[in-house]
Image 1 (cartoon, one colour):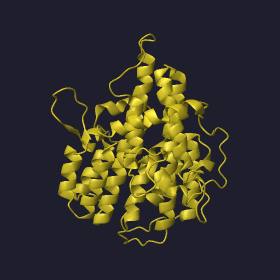
Image 2 (tube, one colour; image 1 turned 30 degrees about the vertical axis):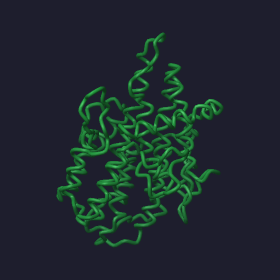
Image 3 (cartoon, one colour; image 1 turned 90 degrees about the horizontal axis):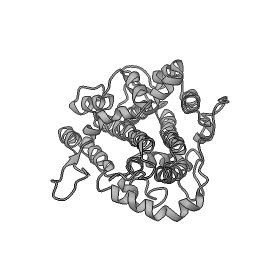
Length: 362
């Protein structure tokens, strides 16, 4: 999705202290072209538009969980505009850049991907069984574009250059080697699973297999959290020895990424979420990570399992931190797996081509 170009450009502008221009880009957009027919004028969707869209209420129960946690309907928009206007707790340019881009990529665009998947399920349920579903823009393709991004290219697993991507695919691939969750093709196992599930979801929507489509959609969203959780743990290790006066970029990154999964953890275990907040949400004048990286890693492992009911082993481990040590979750599974490998192989080129076309609009 070309939304990743907006995020990259916002990152560059904020790192250069050009926050006014970054805010203009955030508010007005410049890369996400609206779908148009015939001689309709060219117009753009901005990340701000996505952040405050009423369509997000379709993303249940995620939308209500995130809104309840933040006590704010437009929580992502509020965070970004405060940072760009200089009214947030973040003062260093690298921190403003980090909180802006992580909020946009892993909170705002993630929820938009959730929205598109939920819309797909509803369209499936509402469809005429004779006519089927034939939207101008397939919501599964839109979700794929929002999770992958235009800079990942058409290669399975995303770009081999880890500097290219800005979205969910990239955060998983960046941490796969560190956490030993890399597959034989040298990209993240979670990304491979998401790809299989997206292909399956596309076929399930076409076939009006709404029950399996709903399972695929839920599993996509769960596996999207693997890379985000790994990033939080890696940042806990990185930030462990920083002082209370630090202006390190990693502190803002840790908060922006943690807020992508904390609402889900809070919904499952509010006490555990509070412990994570005490370590990952920055309070000026206090030492980062008072519990230490090892314990925070275990908190995330338990929170990941309880919130998503997904096996903690999906996270792997890093350095001295094993997030799954002591985690017991009898209800956890490996999520929905697809059995349509021949179908996936046969249709791969078509779907990748479709997602490539969507980068023009998303």
